[in-house]
Image (tube, rainbow, N blue to C red; front, side):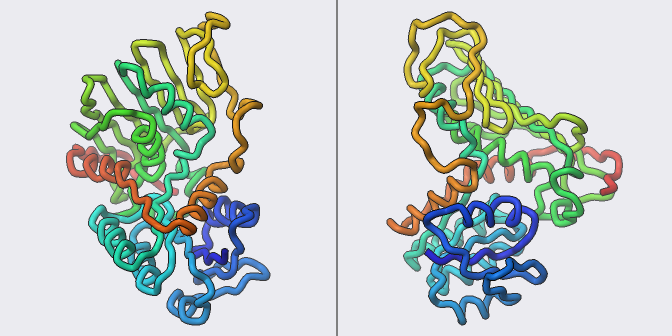
Length: 331
């Protein structure tokens, strides 16, 4: 299937373009960008022109910042094209609801992607937690903004989310692996005095079962980066690290590689599970290849996949958050 990528920036070059190139489902037929191009691929500077001149391209992948994304997505849907949205799917919840309704009326596929949910051990963590009683869940997501978002001024402007740009990745995992819903009860947002969005955040959540659920996001981390979720249950402790790529279970009997049933093989107090056990099925390797495989299936069968739970949590954190001014950030 032919696809056009709109917005040839860092995330497109680092993730989307390699995933499309490796996919058996997709053929990169065009790009839309004011500056970036892909050699050998039809390039457009104007999205409207691309839609008009290339009716054979039925799917577009939008890799734009959140604020301008809505106008492009709505234009594509109204032109009868299927739309794949980088995270977050919009700058506001209202935009996302409007896109959902428009896609439903047009009969086009619409996919709000959450790439961190495709990390290697997220599905296993969800399966293991399904029948456990949660006592606490702690999210620690700390990274260096200068390393991962160099010179990207839009992240500091309204709609750019600030530290919630990576933080929403953690929340997308949490909402995927927990069997019970959570919602924000309190938040503390540290905002640089020369910026509009937070550089750090502390959040507390309500959990239906009474578990203590908290998250710490920080963009000032130097040295080793930390992307970790720790869940303490009535049957042991689960830790997802490296953004969901590695899973560790402590205080348990050994479990089988699929993490579906306990076995009595050993009483190893710290069982580390490799990202890809040899007897696992072989889905596409990597988060973005899996997203594009799912988009292909969504286009083939038609329908919508617009899970907005991670964005709801971010919106509520901004609504309830106490803003604290902190030192100016200089990129």
